[in-house]
Image (cartoon, rainbow, N blue to C red; front, top):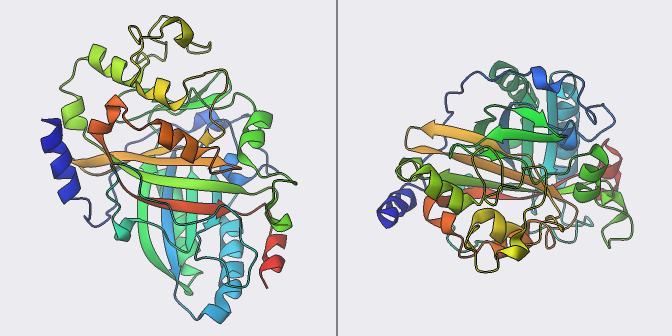
Length: 355
């Protein structure tokens, strides 16, 4: 039955992107959050991301010689909506930089990983706008204002997202995914640790202008929720490797590390459980920060806008993705789009390096 569902997902992977209806999610969790100050980069501001988002991928619609001017316009338009009840940023794809520019060393087109069926109409792009806010209306208004100011760009794809049960627990931003499990436990618990994992430092071999920036990975992941819901909660928990309430399968609280070493055969936590494959040594967490959203375009088309930030793609997302080969959850998921992007450091000084 899983193969049947996967076939349905594959045949509809090229479906046009629509705007899903979003439920109401409270935004009160943001007040007083550490790391929510204006000096923090917008994509890392606050322990918990704002509950609504729209991700828009754009391609340059004017000549290549005007690319830097078009990027300056995008930078201004994003800065105009960022702040208060909105957090907005831009990120560049591998084709977003002028040909003569000293681009980030690891930036490339997102490759096709095992099991992916990437739809070109939902993948890649020269420029990514990521706009989040405390309400769906605020996101829509900010996105509309931004796009109206950017006639130099054409929309390639766009997708709305939301974070049900969005809240903070022990310094980590948590939300409920369409599989009914809470996500975010693996994220850092402090603003300083978040910055450490997600932002480029001097001496990494990156261009000097890129210091303070981040690599962003977007993955549009369709979830076979109807087939998932036919499994028992016990089966689902063994596939994930956690209880629905966040506890580990061996009874360890969500805030502590599980004793995987005491379970070498996977009798308690299966060896192909998602969390065990992703981070087999919980004392050495993946070098990334997840800040994703749920999406729903139709009753049979819903899933995750997986989004993560890191200072090193190879050590962050790609290391985790390679470890996830053979995980039990792969039967229920299909990645149909997304891309690799680079979030520049705050401000607009980085643009001078592209001229």
